[in-house]
Length: 315
Length: 315
Image (cartoon, rainbow over all chains, first blue to last red; front, top):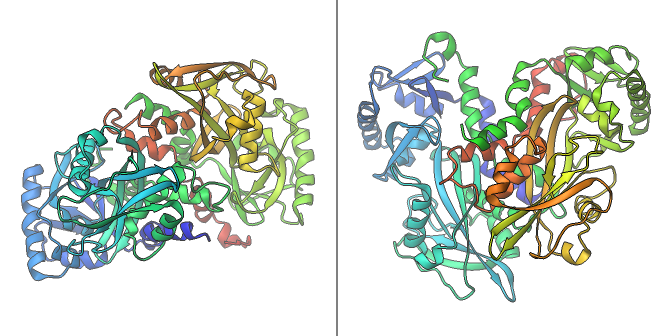
């Protein structure tokens, strides 16, 4: 097993092993599966029977809640309560940032939820990531990495891609990329004119905080050799420009944020640095950069007993 | 449903609908599932009980055959016989070209099989494809397409990527890319110095001839604006350089080889031409360019009754 294939297992630990254990229960909102719930979370949700119905092997948000507003307002106090009881690590990193829960990326939101709580429900998360690179006259292809500030609530002090950020409610994808690039690395509008959309990666990670079925919209930006990113929002400790060989060593190290590796691996593959001649597990790695998250939740749903229990399916 | 998402359904028709019907039976060699067999093919294979054992919902190559050589030599006369009986369209396009049947890309071959017969057994196929492109001073990004010769056994007269070819036994991936580029488009070694590996696409198509679980190793080559590809092996009718907008129209038309669309779509995504701002089904299309073929065959195997019927699994 090559080191990059091993790495692909690390950021897909839930996809490759957790999912198969079938310990997690589908989370249903309005007849759609929008998440997966671990046994430790389920145990807590049992205490809020007016909000979460637990039946037929599923956790269902009370279908009596009529709309986005009502669903959001019923879930919020449960999360506040769980935060106060201090039962979940992730809620210690409360963001005060709302995340839209949807059946799929382009569908209407079903409810909004505090961002730090989404991993308790295994809600799909979407973000943007930017690969900043330089074609250096002497060193060849080089990539900019950022070191996350030690004060960050998640992955403090770990190395990361040059720029990244979650998609918040009502903010577009390209808009988020521009906003994060300006805040995190002081990329000017002139430089950002050469920002290019380059695909997406999807993977399913499980960490101490919860479940992360993540999809990142990937952008690349080629930067002049003399440009040095500067942080403007206090969330970055430092930046470093690295040659490909050093990048490869860094992403497989413990110093790199596990859930950011897929973006770098995808970049290295698209730019021919990881290729069929030097990577024996090439095809398997590419598959693990694009795991079928949308089918997983559909499959879980049809596997469960929902259909025979009268929950309306809009499929 | 956008036109590119619709197109992704077309080249994944088997993945999205055929697979779910569960009409096809796993094809087992040495305890590994290496293919899927349609009912029409199974009916014919029943006539060769000394070669194909049909039991437990599977078709198994007789496990008494001891090695690569014996397995290959027992299958070959069956295929010759089927060809003579003229029962399968695909065998009318006999290639006289051997294809290695393996459990996964980098494992040892289990047997070799005439290439035109692999789709009868749903054997995974691997090929290389090259996107030839030009950054034209006036027209912007342009892509070279080839029109397949009318004499080709498959997809005659259809438009296709600039260069592509199947991987034959004992030929490397980059080696195949170079060989096909020279034969199909007269790319010189000087030009080929800038050929770049850029990833892979996987999809599962079903056509009149059979089942095609295909994986293409993808390469890109940027060409000078004044270069014009010239065919050297008689397999190409003509070449055409097209602007992106025209490319998009062509790949969704009936004039384009269905199973070559994934490579072009992947290129257009990697180069930001299809992006989250202009493509509502962006993430779903990217998923359908990377369907998990390797997991499909494993899943089919564990779903069937093989395990309880004593066929040795080497997993």
